[in-house]
Image 1: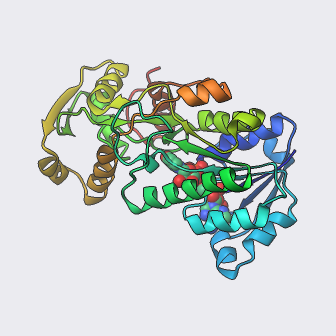
Image 2 (image 1 turned 135 degrees about the horizontal axis):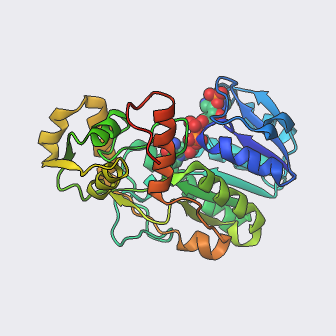
Length: 321
Ligand SMILES: NC(=O)c1ccc[n+]([C@@H]2O[C@H](COP(=O)([O-])OP(=O)(O)OC[C@H]3O[C@@H](n4cnc5c(N)ncnc54)[C@H](OP(=O)(O)O)[C@@H]3O)[C@@H](O)[C@H]2O)c1
């Protein structure tokens, strides 16, 4: 097929695009041309890359036409954040594509009630990002139900892979937290350290997207989580990482209001967002309907990423494997 990936050189695209090329598809990647994929791969030589600023073309009202003119069979939209962006895609592509895959986020759930959270639980998002993504999802599901628009929604967790910092056991992105654990120094965690994170390797997100195409009839009109087999508690995550470095974790627990004074405002805000959501999502639906078989647990994905950060001098710690 002829597959258009909008925003295809980021975390997801780095793994998704080679998978699509290797499956024999013709792949077009649309980005601004500012970033290269995180990983080199020969498949990129077979990809048509087009430089476009989606935001600018959306403002000019030309983006839908641009996408349609590329005559894609499938559109994978990795960078739609507002319902209006998705509406424009539906208006442009209705009747012309076999499938439109929208990349959402597990933030559409807000906080959890029954865990692991299933895709079918009512949405109670909070925060602009989750609210906008949930509205886009709701619009697409309605379009699929009423008008047969072939939409599939894929909700990733915290995406991990070699080349960038994973969300760390303190719930933010500062790689120093891994150094602290590697050296056996004290690490402060908020509350009891029992709030959760739900990572996923970028290649497993790519797997869910590709499987949603190969399992088309089960996937259209449906939402799927793209997460690892299990979420991590902050405390368990810290202990596992310290153990990986051959150290016991030296943890201290502080009420969140006190803890946030120990980190930068930016890190405190990121941790607050993560622990307020404390995601723990189910993969049962993707396993059952898409034959999703995650290649990585959360910790395996994190260890691969941290090994890369050590090898590239971002984290100063012994390269244990
Ligand atoms: N990262 C996470 O942990 C995470 C978690 C849950 C959900 N998600 C969802 O995943 C999606 C993002 O995927 P990702 O993490 O793979 O993205 P990413 O790493 O941020 O990469 C973004 C891609 O989009 C391109 N891009 C950015 N702005 C653009 C514009 N205005 N016009 C055209 N291209 C543009 C970038 O290339 P250029 O810069 O060269 O244009 C790049 O290819 C989003 O929908 C996000 O909500 C992400």
